[in-house]
Length: 227
Image (cartoon, rainbow, N blue to C red; front, side, top):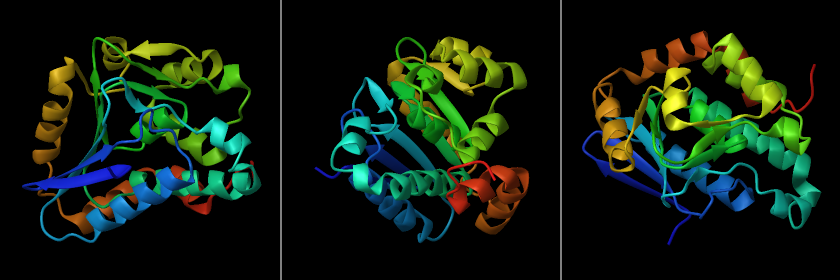
């Protein structure tokens, strides 16, 4: 079974992350980039939906065990590749919807935030930015991405408290657009994506790059430290 599966249903590309907790390591990042490149090379009306292959997880963030072991030597370069993946998704030239079927933690939460829209499971699973509790700084591009998606108060609380936020509360706070039962997460995400699949790719890319210029520029640069 591939780490990332992509299938097309009409105008909708459904990208399913199939690596357990979907923690970000080199193999996972390479598979995501390859999948996204394939979707981008397609033609005609299209939109992208991403989801996790297991009920409990969307993505649990960086693979810290791998980074402390086999990935230690490439840590700085790998973090840059994570930033660039987020930038690619944020500037993706078609509508994108994250179907958050389970936990979205740390870089996994940022992966969800990089989408245009988010549908989350209401009954189980948390959105969480726990960096304050695990002593990991947030790169400038990641911070700009988070800030562009959350209201000022939610941005402050999420970053400085590391609070875990369930789907229903995430909807109330504007983090996600819909909070639904587990069996409706993917269908609702597909419905939302389908309603926008006819948008022109060139104008969609242009508008997103203009709306989120600071975040996209920082992410694409791979900047790890503050200028």
